[in-house]
Amino acid sequence: MSNEVAILGVGMHPWGKWGKNFVEYGVKAAQDALADAGLDWQDVQFVAGGDTIRNGYPGYVAGATFAQALGWQGAQVASSYGACASGSQAIATARAQILAGLCDVALVVGADTTPKGFFAPTGGGDRSKDPDWLRFRLVGATNPVYFGLWARRRMELFGATEEDFAKVKVKNSRHGAKNPNARYPKAFTMEEVLASPMVSDPLRLLQICATSDGGAALILTSMEFARKHTANPVTIPAVSNVTPKYPNTLIEMPNFSTDSGAGISVPDVPFRPSIAKNAYEQAGLGPEDMDLAEVYDLSSALELDWYEIIGLCKEGEAERLVRDGDTAVGGRIPVNTSGGLGAFGEAIPAQAIAQVCELTWQLRGEAGGRQVEGAKLGITANYGLFGHGSSVIVKR
Amino acid sequence: MSKTPTPAVEGWFTLDRKAPHLLGTRCTSCSNVFFPKETTFCRNPACTGSEFEEVELSRTGRLWSFTNNCYAPPEPYQAADPFEPYAIAAVELEQERMVIMGQVVGGVGVEDLEAGMEMELVLDTLYEDDENEYLVWKWQPSQAAA
Ligand SMILES: [Zn+2]
Image 1 (cartoon, each protein chain N blue to C red):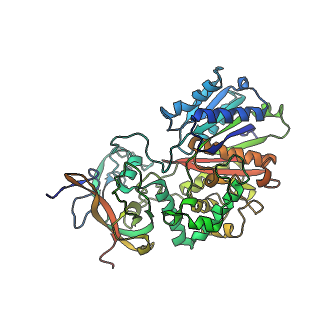
Image 2 (cartoon, rainbow over the protein chains, first blue to last red):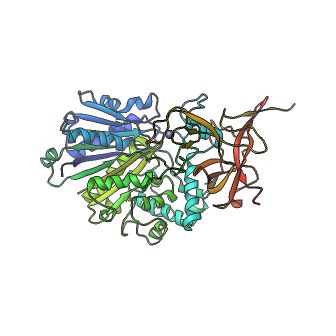
Image 3 (cartoon, rainbow over the protein chains, first blue to last red):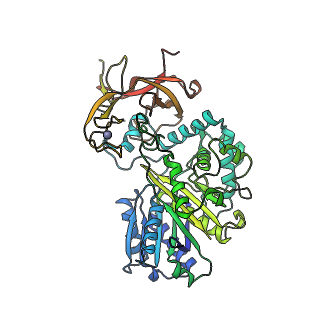
């Protein structure tokens, strides 16, 4: 298919709180991806960096910083910042370069070093025009506040329970315990999850993703180039980076309010489902074709929203999927086999890339104790602050 | 000495302590309403309007969802010491079909809340310094409905 590029190599720096410079994580991930592809750094013609807002002058405007650390060799460069969608924007940029015939081999890399505790606006001063500053100032609306609002909405609308949310965490922690790159290699019990302190009701500490250091990288190539190296490469047939359609009637970080849905027709497909829908359409595939998924479990409850958003079930049915074990490895449609953000924590510019690393390992049959047997197709879903969609379909 | 009541953010709400309103804008071309105020370009993709009039939003709405802060939020939030957990509500204004988030008044916890209940807008203290009492909008269960 003409819209495919190959994933020839993947690499990660394990997630954790290592306290090192982010560049080190990105370089390690890139070197692992190059080794995995069997290529040399000098073979890379294009570097796509996922930027981080942290670590000074936005992550040293990331792409070139990684290129310098690997040794300047004159490659073309681009850098992307789209909050949690930074990584998939970098993937989209590299893919477009390859599909346009401008290069054959691209490195996609993102890495972050994060502070302890809640994410808060970077930089000081009175920023009374910046909604991300104002939401902290006026409401104290931390990220977990939004997660709590969405989780409570599920309880009120669909009868979700605290136990349902805890089951997601237990499932993902079992997956993460079998992933050497996960920050938390511990399989939690229901009792442990439900005994952890409440942060933003109904969500407890163990149901909210932490912030982590980490890095992830891909070597993307043209199909023609890939076939000289491997008979059956893993490919990317779709990358979706859609924005919302007006009016967006779901309250999203960092906003105080939704758009007004009065006197105007509301889009048939809301923003979040439109992210996956666009990816499916690009690939000519549907949710029924997927063997597994990596989704953006900022909270354990939010993972349930994603089951519906990416079309694994109808609205209001997600609780049944987790109760029946459908989304655990061994179930009908495993979700977050990596352990998800629950086992990793957020390393913002790396996480959309890390989702693709996991699907690649799964599709190659290299996922060890968390392997989904015979997986051929997977989807990632994610999105960044201020309206950045992110979804990638991975195929073998 | 009493402190001067000062809005914590300028122009977002009326200072009527009895019946405050949030202040938004309405596009004079397509009538879409925005909060916080949109004043430069209409966000409706089918509209090229760039003129807006200030509007008072409905004071009441239905509780869409709610949560709380069990721990003090980081700066720039000005947390009291010792910190008292507080609830946060997202309320859907019926007329505007817009969900707006805000703190819930003290003394009303998540256990007192239920999706769909009617909520009303009030003004309350966000924080104080030596001279000023900074005011912000908050939600409380509707007194009329109770
Ligand atoms: Zn307009």
